[in-house]
Amino acid sequence: MTETSTPADAKTTRRIELREQIGELVREHFELLPEPSPDESPLSMPLYGPEEVNGALECLLEQQVTMGSRVAAFERQFADFMGSKHAIMVNSGSSANLIAISVLCQQAVKNGLRPGDEVIVPAVTWSTTIAPILQLGCVPVLVDIDEQTLNLRPESIEEAASDRTKAIMPVHLLGNPVDMEPLMDAARERDMWVIEDTCESLGSEIGGKKVGSFGHFGTFSFYFSHHITTIEGGMVVTDDQQLADLARSLRAHGWSRDMSNRPEIEAANPHVDPYFLFVNVGYNLRPMESQAAFGAVQLRRLHEFNEQRRANALILGTALERYSDHLRLVSEQQGGRSTWFGFSVILEDAETRARLRDHLEARKIATRPIVAGNLAQQPAFRDNPHRVVGSLSTATSIGERGLFIGNHPNLTPAHLEHIVTAFDDFFS
Image (cartoon, rainbow, N blue to C red; front, top):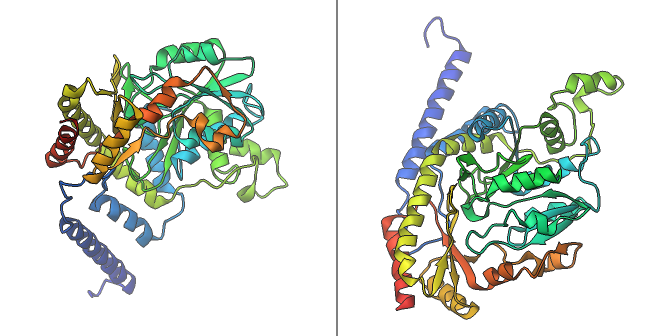
């Protein structure tokens, strides 16, 4: 220690040295991880590395762990990426859907959703697209999907709308974008709210614009297997200041401290301590600083990730075209740019689908149904209030004949060869 140094200076220097050593150990750990087996193809493989882990560790070492400056910084970065005015991070993509629906159900929102109002949704989606609609007392209206894209058709609004229909929730399924311009035109004609469920399609585009940025809300998931990961986490984006304020309030107990009009709220309630001033009946859906540290690194890698997903899909699609008499592939519609969250195939019949599934699984190629099939057949939704438009025959058929395999940036040429060989063996 020099004459001018102090014990505090020495401790600071030592902490910096220790953090650098920890960072080096983390990097060395990742360098020593075994290469993934080319004979196995799980739905996903970890997409994070030492930079993400060190970012999360930095939060723990600094003892800055609850929602704070890193979350705010990641929200700004995400909003800039999307071209949206506001981004509000939450603890999961499911929570993002819950927040979006909850905001629109607030009395403060003019012409918002009220109990009994209807929300149009595709019959093929994830459960937490529909669950918040029911949880907030509204009624999901299930419409069929297009077999080529697996998405709802914009013309479904005309077929499904009633006097009680107040919103539509298009889902960009498995990376494939919905044709949003005609959908937005139809929604505007009927003064409907639009919530884009983009949890499986971060970075996908239609007409040169990112999906999730068309509607009143766009929702995103950062689950472990999604386009970027914060392990668990999600985001809502909007251009509307009131909707953003309400989302920030509902995310954290319903308090006022994160709202842009906080001074006015406090002035109107001088008898309440502003630290704990509750203006809405909210939740606790806050993310952690470590999740935001993960996300900031992952967002910088998203373009690379999505380009690899697209390259994988092109290789698999080209190789499997020769079996077009026996299976059908999902198509990328004109003007659309898919990020291929999964690689889907539609078989001739349910029996062939079952045999292919067993064949692939036996070769350690993980499969899943195309999301959850026709949700109108699922007990949780079949036995709760809902309305069905038409027969939902395509949704039912896709559930019976479709499956998808994992498509992620860590698939190597050897993995892709293993997958193609498995299909060759099956169809030969």
